[in-house]
Image 1: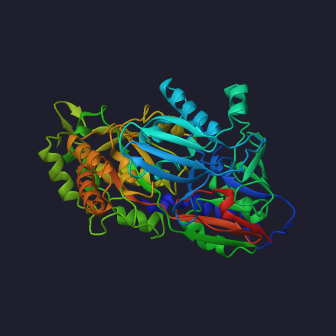
Image 2 (image 1 turned 30 degrees about the vertical axis):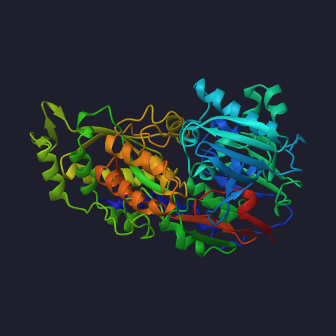
Image 3 (image 1 turned 45 degrees about the horizontal axis):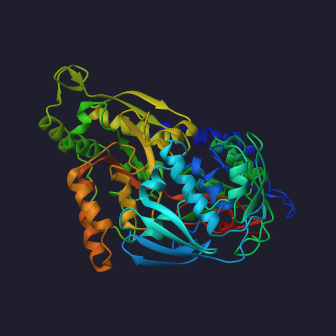
Length: 523
């Protein structure tokens, strides 16, 4: 494996930054906090993006949300009551308002869920995951601050599904009177920060909302800018022109720690990294033995050690702690076993180049990866291709695609994916929710993988209200899906942030930068 060559770009970048290493940035507490992300937002309308949770839940607010410890807590909602298997009563906090002064009440909640239903039915927006998880028939007004949510099937973990950013509560008047092309980048919400302006290349300007339900956020002004290249993000942090960056490469962590005026924050992560295996394209990928062979062929431990500094633990990363089975073993690195499985599946070496074939079809696959959407994503793809070639699987085309293109394909449940795609999935904070990664109807299942036995296990589990049965049902579904290898399992991504010393920052385990919760103040 050519890990030394793969690490070359970071080392080169260090040389470019040498002039800034000895400089302590001069800070002024009164200037805005500057946050650098890797891509421009797809949309600031929550129903049209799954890729911009950082900004969506800084501007918007849902009925429930996740706090900084990953617990589901009421937000716009005050309480929820289970009436029967299909009916829930949700009470809304009184006295809350949107940024434009419209009241937050039952009408706003009904409008929001009606809008989501209509958009999804029309094939518009990015609601496949949210409405695949939250299967409701309708939301009805009971009184000014109470609604009834009627489900199409039982949902014991409804509050976990109500935290999804896509179903943030919206002001009816504003979103009815203004066309979609206006509201897409001129949002009005109920979150901790008000929208001021946005221009691609210049940034998103936000202002603390003084009537936010938790009180005015401690940092008054924030600018969120897109800087695709990690080298540039780090350079700006070192120069003092940025206060927070995410996705610091492991090989640059020590260097950044030695920079005056900068600190590095390493936090636990629940973001699962894997390589999606798309069904319906290459015939080999429908065979579980081939998918298992692809898992056995990769030395995940070496990748984690060499590319991620040993900060990632290889596992079947389908379910996050504490619900996962810690005794479930990942696929061991075993090239001999991989070759045996491929032979058993009928894919045998037939030519001098060592690539396998069956019935005249070569085991040659096409793969896509982003560059910088996840830690070392492009480099992981390159190393994986080398490992697979050693067992007779060819990556005939490894293509680097833009993060925005990847987001569009993810929004369409993987439409446009080729045979393999470097991918990830955030946490749902429940076992039932994490299993949506491989459930056939879920917006998270972009592999088009479906399995009848798993669907039976999933349906029984997700409709079971007796919590004493959940752990056993969770582990059974996890073990079965894990061994079916619908993806190439890797690890959870470590969260590594670069932070200016003037910023008080608290990381979250889901890796999301909800600015009103993670920015604690400026010094």
